[in-house]
Length: 487
Image (cartoon, rainbow, N blue to C red; front, side, top):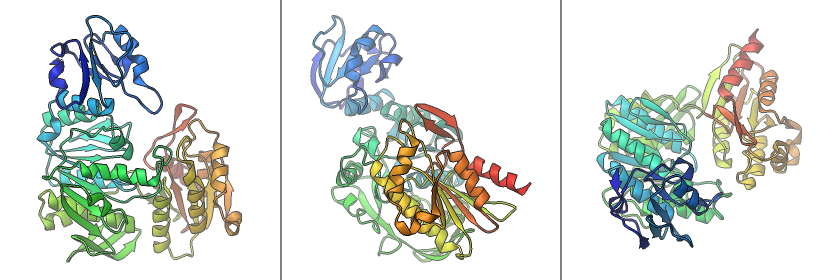
């Protein structure tokens, strides 16, 4: 229980009707979760508008309403707070309600199109190995030191973020690594949080179903760095043409990493094999089990962040050499028939290109490379032909299939993809709508020493079709089919 006026600290308020001295039980933005004496925050979302549920929140027991537009009829005895932006208000209110938990640990945000999950998850792993209590807020899972919680969004809502940060405070967590998505930044979910540092990985084609233009998408990412305090560090990949853009208005201390340009943290790839990478970082050599040039960038980000957070260089090198790959990120195994199966979350054109180029750099070209790939429904349609173009150009054979079709017709999604296949690649491309059948077919097509890449879903253990989620795990399914072939 807290006094409403204390929860409203730093919220930009236009008008107040009623008393802010009342005591409230908790904050909710879902009217269905409201109980007696709760405060309801009406969020104007992209799908539904919380202002339409103010009456229901009051029926359920809300004693205070926070909204951008006051209702025409105001109930007696209730408190109404008109704010400039409900999303920002919710973020500050959540931060206040849970006791400004980000101020009691070192919170580092990771943003960019690709690599967020890998960088944040491996930093969690590294600092755990170094003996610290660590937190993680990622696409794959939420970790409060050794306890795992289910993740539902790349960047959770403000209430969820602060709730878990408070739990981390209770458990004595010292460091927390957090994925920061463009949706999360745009919807102000990270407002009010105190960051120790921010990391920019890269920027490529994604989320243009949500952001109107690529420029808007870039500027939303940049906003995260604009908001970092002077006490924080900003670590950016300057091989990406947008890397220096992130620095333009930041007050944070600026640091850079790169493979191709001069930077504070620079790496050279000495060896690149399926067994791992041999890197030279600044003046030190390092072996890691991670694979590919895209992971060389991830390793550089991890190395730089760990040093900026106070770890000693030689210890960082040792800990990186012990890191294990993140689930669904270039996760692979070799069957008894010597078929290599790789499962990767690559769901953007750039990520798919990186993974396929990595495989092609390593393989001898005597093997067949079979790629199984789809695109999600109700998402950015413009990347569909690009994904198919890249897959068909860089693979020996391609099977276009379903990803998470959601509320779209799977065949329509595949048709959109097929438009990107160039004439010379028609014959090596086929379409199989059923993803399980597509994976099975790839396994049947593969012979000894061949390589199967299953792209798009990575760590996900479900397939979303018409509003329902069905059990589906690419890694388990390809293992099962390859074992059946051995019998």
